[in-house]
Structure formats: C-alpha cells, structure tokens
Amino acid sequence: MKNNTKKISLIGLILMIFSSIYGFGNTTVAFEQMGYASIVWYIFAAIIFFLPSGLMFAEYGSALKDSHGGFYSWLSNSIGERVAFVGTFIWLASWVIWLVSTSSKIWIPLTTLIAGSDQTQTWHFLGLQPIQTVGLLAVIWMIIVTFVTARGVDSVARIGSIGGIFIMVLTGIFFAASIILLIVNHGQLQQPITGMSSFVKSPNSSFGSPLAILSFVIYAIFAYGGMETMGGIVDDLDKPEKNFPRGILFATFFITIFYSLSIFLWGISTNWVKVIGGDNVNLGNITYILMNNLGLFFGESIGLSHSTSILLGSLLSRFAGLSMFMAYCGSFFIMTYSPLKSFILGSPKELWPAKMTKLNKHGMPAFAMWIQAAFVCIVVVLISFGGSGAQKFYSILTDMGNISTTVPYLFLVAAFPYFKKKKGLKRPFVAYKNELFTNLIVFVILVVLVLGIVFTAIQPILEHDYMTAFWTIIGPVFFGGVAELFYLLRKKNLKK
Image (tube, rainbow, N blue to C red; front, top):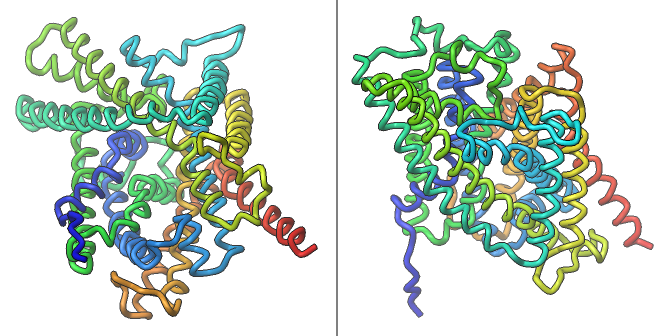
C-alpha cells in the first residue's frame, strides 16, 4: 500500500532545526562574556562541532529509528550496555542540572514582567539573603511542579509553545530596532570596533587570559546543542539522502549568521562598560537588562522624551520577561518527566529497582521523579546557601549547565566509529563513507570538546575559586560515578 503520509520538505527541515537550536538568550550571554570576540568562537563551534556532529546524529537516528530509548539505544547498539548506561546517566545529569539552573533563574523573568526590571537581588525573606530567598523559591517551585506533573497534569507545558512564539516576536523586534538605530545614528556603534582586536579580545576582564578565552568554546558549543533530537526524523523527510545533508548545511549557515549578526547588533545599542560592567548585571538577568537598554536608547535616538524612553525600555524588558517566563514554564514541566521517563523505559528494566520503573495510573514514573526532585532541591540549597553573590551564583549555574550538556556529546561522538562498523543495520542515510575521514573528524571534535571542558574546569581553579570549580564539574562526575556503581551492583545482584 502506498504511504500517503506527507513528507517534510527541505525548507521544513531547515525551519525545524533553526527553531530547535537558535536561542535568543545565547546571544546576550555571548555579548556579556566576550563582546564581539564571541562571534569568532560561534563560527568555530558551528564548523567544528555543529555541522559534523549533526550528520553523525542523523546516521544514528535513521539506522536506529525503531529502537526505544533514544540516547541510550544509540550508545548500547554501538559500544555496549555498560558504557551506554553510564553515558546516558550523564546525559540525564545535563537535564537535572538544567532543572537546578532554571528553577533558580525563572524568578528573574517573572519579577521583570511585574516590576520592569530584575528585583530578585532585593528579595529578603525571614532574614535570608536574596540568593538564599531565590534558592528557597526554587525548591518550592520544584516540589510543586513534580507534584502536579506526577499526576499527569502536563497541560501547562503547552504555554511553552506560546512563549516560543513570543520569543520569535522579541527577536524580530530586536533586529528591527537595531537596524533602525544603525540608520538613525548614521552607522555609529555604542560598542565601538577598534580594529581586529575587538573580534579577538573580550571587554570582560574574566576572559582576559588565553585559557579563559579558550574555555568560551563550551559556551559556543552549548548554543548549538540539541541537534541529536533531529536524528529521528530522517525517515519523515522527502528524499532524505539529499535533503538531510542539505538541510544541515543550510541550517548551519543560517544559524551561524543569525548568531553572529545578533551579537554584532547588540553593540549598536549597548556600550559594554556602561551597561554591562556594573555589579547588578549577571548571566541570569543579562537578557532583560540589554532589552531595557535597547528600548531606552531607541527612544532617545528617535527624539522621544526621557520619561517615554524609560517607559519603552520597561515595556521591552517586561515583554522579554513574559516571553522567557512562559518558555521556561513550558519546558520545565516537560523536562521534569520526559528525559527521566525516556531513560528508564528505554533501558533494560532489570538494571533498575522495581520502584524506579513502575508507572503510576497517570503513566508517570512518580517515585523516580521524586528522587530527582530531592536531588535538585539539595543541589539548589547547597549552591544558594554557599555564600556567593548574584554574579557568582548565576555564573556557577551557567557553567554547570554548559559542562553537563557538553560531556554527553563525548560519548555519542566517540561511539560513532563503532556504530559505523556495526553489521546488520539498515542505513537509509549515510553521510560518512570514508573510514579514515570519519575517524579524523571524530578525533577533531573530541579534542575540541575535551579541551573546552578541561579549560572551563581549570579556569576557576587557577583563580582559586574552588567553589565554582567544584560545582562546574560535579554533575557529570557525580552522575557518572553513581551510574557505574549502580550498574555494577545491579549486575552483581542479577547473578545471584
């Protein structure tokens, strides 16, 4: 019988990849960390990581489309059950760390929506410091979301798609306002370009050393994360053998252009020293501060009164707060159960205690979800009550997220040559046909990933910031160790 299912076109694939990968918030973080110099690293990450790894994930997804478990299935079919279990456990850690980070950051867009600016640094409750208050709210939020989601009420997640639409509108406003400013101000930039050094040297003193600059590659790679989710749609494409590589090539080009252009456009309205150099700016509120400044500068540039310009800045920051809050909420409800459920149900049941794999009447692994919630709450409390200020607090959360998201790619990329040698697999899509070339690409990606991770971990140690160093690397190390111990104990018990 003829399959009348409508296939995804090349244009559709490009739009899917773009919407899944491009993150508006990544551009503000890049500008805060490295200014114009971040553009070079974003281009580097696209060529060295995003494009070649995307083709690898496409091969995984097309050949193992019928396997359940996603990440785990890819690894177990390539390098075996044990490494797959450890690798997927570390992959799960990246989402758990995301929950830790987002449960703390979600209050910034909410207070920006209500007050027009980030007020979390002024919050006090029962004598607690602002960061401790945010930590307490994050714990309450995690408990409430787990309670609601475990009962199958995940309809709140739908507001995430609305938030996504709002972010697209926000991006459009940013581009339009920036271009108008460039014309109105006759090409003058608020962050001046002083030769090639502007694209090499960061205005941020934290990224003044060569080691710190090299560690930024992890930020750039994080901005391109998520391509592995596209691997499973190869069979739904029209002419996949031609359109998938074309789609990745075009998407890589457009996403890189959009990232590079966005970073450059921030310099039209933002002077790094005047706007970002203050103590009130951190990686949690940078997006809202830059949007507020964009509105203020836009109003002043077109001749509006100072009070009206302030109002315009407040409106833009509130809209950014609304967009990000809705996107965070939607994603949070999904990520509370989706990665955990995928891993537990996709891996062999005998590796887990019965309670972990049991689904409640709502189809949710409630027991496992509450263990996850307890872990998230403990980490949030330890970090927020660790005595750090706002800048350090959100820097720790960002570094934790970047490292824990990047480490799982080491497993997927390293396993690829073994996957290529696997016999008996139907491979509807093949991008890498030469073994020597494949191994060379794998080697280059692994070197870049390892060096980026090592530099990111070493940098705070060299600065004697041992707290940041500890939390930066603890996620993958802890989860990897727990996974190895857990696997060995389960296997030992099964042999009895």
